[in-house]
Image (spheres, rainbow, N blue to C red):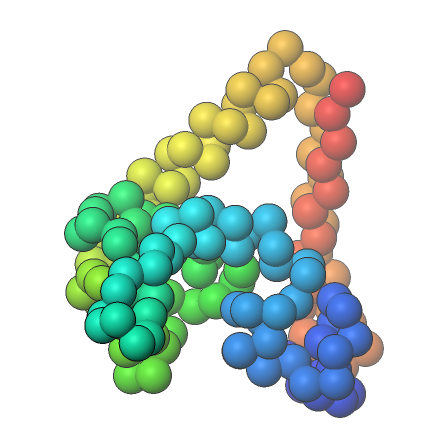
Length: 153
């Protein structure tokens, strides 16, 4: 796999395509951010009379972990990124939850997410004719490329 020719975001052309940009700013990922934003809503709580601070009010929930797993997969972020100390600390602070390990995400949630996704696809395609074409080739540099085309009516 080759590197991108520059550091710009492929979706919005922001000059720096960093993890922070992808997670917080890139408009391309807004639909995937919505469930997380809904779960991470914050509420004002008074710390003292002089100043207020925002604190998450999210209860500990397996639904949060499943949603996190779904969002990571949907955004093509490898699940091993939950092992990154900065990312892990961010999630734990702002969700008031301990974050599952990569292994727990894989063993506990991937199958459910796959089943739900397949059910949605089956529901969408129910009663429709589906055409699928699978092919393989190599590019100019000799790398193998799989091609999947699908259409339905």
